[in-house]
Amino acid sequence: MSALSLRLPDSIHRHIKEVAKKEGVSINQFISSAVSEKISALLTEDYLKERAGRARKKDLKKILDKVPDRKPLLGDEV
Image (cartoon, rainbow, N blue to C red; front, top):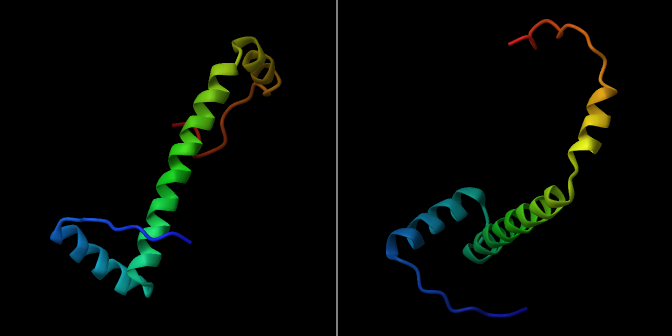
C-alpha cells in the first residue's frame, strides 16, 4: 500500500470528515473509495466510447428489426 500526502482546502476536508463519520468509515477509507469510484467511472466512459466507435448502424438495424411491432404496455406509452 502507498502513502499519499494531499493538500485540500479546509472546507473540503471538513466535509470529508463529516461524511466519513456519518458513513462510519475512516477518512482514508472514504477518500480511497471516492477515488476508486471516480477511476471506475472514467474507465467505464472510455470503454463505452471505444465500443461505440466500433458500432455499425446495420448491426443495430438487425437487432431492432427483431423487436415485435406492437402497442406499448399501459404506462409505457408516454
